[in-house]
Length: 182
Image 1 (spheres, rainbow, N blue to C red):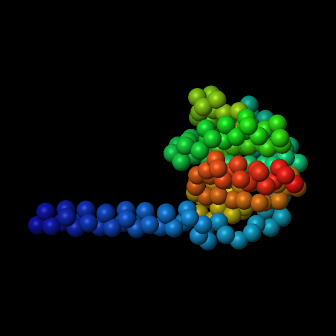
Image 2 (tube, helix red, strand yellow; image 1 turned 90 degrees about the horizontal axis):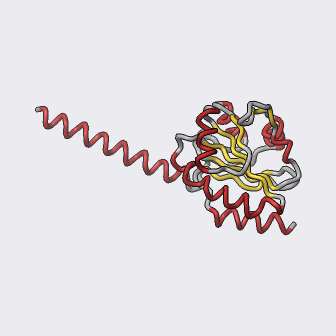
Image 3 (spheres, rainbow, N blue to C red; image 1 turned 180 degrees about the vertical axis):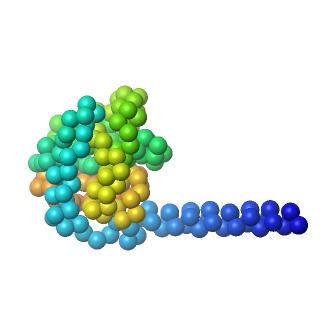
């Protein structure tokens, strides 16, 4: 009897894991999770929201208005976030002098973010959004509050791209190619 119960539990757990895997795959491939254009008020709210930097000083994204702005919502405990950040560091170095600015908004604790930034030698500003970061991300299209989530804003502050999941380096280069020619 115990073997039958164990088999049933394992079968149920396997079915659940498979369902979660399929759902995650569907969600990360451009489903309604990130569809729907955010209105100007949502983007302006993103620009206006004060968050502390690693020194504890309040900063808003309005500081970088006029640049192509890549805003990445992430956390130190998020494995896909950790995977994409080295590419962001490379791209900040490559495109920073052409008017591209990466900004990371961490849904995490400042001490953990600071240690992680040192470890990876992150060369762009990091802000501490705590769990309010997830609400900001939701307002600009992250309907399930998952990480990583990245938005790209053009020089006029318009939302031109949003990505739930890892944003690949080639995709960003393509976006920059279009935006920096204008």
